[in-house]
Image 1 (cartoon, one colour):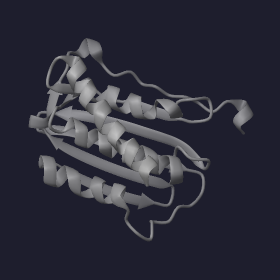
Image 2 (cartoon, rainbow, N blue to C red):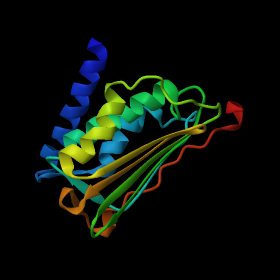
Image 3 (cartoon, rainbow, N blue to C red):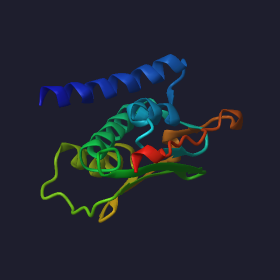
Length: 177
């Protein structure tokens, strides 16, 4: 419990640092994802991040960082970042009304929904609607977890195109087969 709690506190601290380091009241979404997913971007995992350059407001950044941390921890234990994992794809799109973020995991074995909801799943389902007026949908599919977030426009800042998030993907090598 203590180690899990400390990791959650670290995720929040990292989000606060990202906002503070920018000198603004915004944290870049791609940076938040890359910091949390960096340990999993090796030759054995497939992680893809893709979306336009956007930043998240300082009121929403800690909450989103904690949700990304919870999703990453879950994916490491049970999903795309674990031993049976195949692919994690995180995409986002910004329209004038808000930001849609999709977290889609693919696994090689058939999954079943969890028998009980822990802190992480409860947080993910409730935090966005209650804390920022957004939406969250979780789907426990046989081939992996799919989560869709929608955050309202007042929580998002569009960044100049020259800082566009690049696609990062690691493919399995032939020795992984």
